[in-house]
Amino acid sequence: MTTTHSFHLGLKIGDLQGATLAILPGDPNRVKKIASLMDGAKYIFSNREFTTWSAKINKETVIVCSTGIGGPSTSIVVEELSQLGIRTFLRVGTSGAIQKYIKIGDVLIITAAVRCDGASQHFAPLEFPAVADLSCTIALIQAAKNIGIKSHFGVTVSSDTFYPGQERQDTYSGRVIQKLRGSMEEWKNLGVMSYEMESATLLTMCLSQGLRAGVVTGVIVNRTQKEIPNVTLIHHTEYMAMKVAIEGAHIILSKSNTFLHRYAE
Ligand SMILES: O=P(O)(O)O[C@H]1O[C@H](CO)[C@@H](O)[C@H]1O
Ligand SMILES: O=c1cc[nH]c(=O)[nH]1
Image (cartoon, rainbow, N blue to C red; front, top):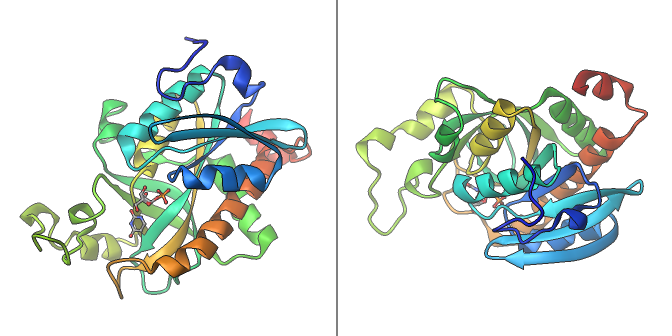
């Protein structure tokens, strides 16, 4: 199915100039920053939490579009951009580490997500795994290496809420419902790296519909030490994750990368 105008993103097919890859930050304020790190950054449209710019990598158009926070708005972005021709999605976001060995400022390449969201269940039953595309994951790992950033790869939990779903106790009510008490310790013991809020929806949607998706997040807090991130540490970490996403896009679009192309075709 194709459409000429998207209801939420406000995009027309011509705006994409044949782009097949989109970089998806959560925060609309990150869109211009990401596009400006590439060639020919151009504002396209903004509506609600969805801001869209385009830019070029090696003369090929790449779309940068914010998802807002959480699965429901992410699912809208993936649906409307895939209707307009996008086939590869790279999420770039922030996350809270739950393993002691992960430091603030490290980047996490997400291979799979624990589906503690609601939106992904509208696309595939819970037994279906939220797994990243292998070629995107390899490209992001290579990208972090090229840039010289410390990266880890593994699983994240995607939660619908920032506070109780990630077992934060220091809240207005101080209450975490019984079902979620001890959940952080459990994920930690199972080797999960982090919490964030969109990957499960993105990865489930893409894997179940023949689309490619990869995820890189910058670690802005370590939950084994602290509940709330320190805002002064966020910008550098965000910047490093953005650099990895752009370099990853570069690798994915590079025609000389025969291994990735053979794998993806
Ligand atoms: O920085 P972004 O991409 O928004 O990602 C993380 O930050 C938000 C919560 O503060 C959630 O969207 C979470 O997934
Ligand atoms: O702890 C964190 C940090 C960023 N985003 C999240 O969802 N959780």
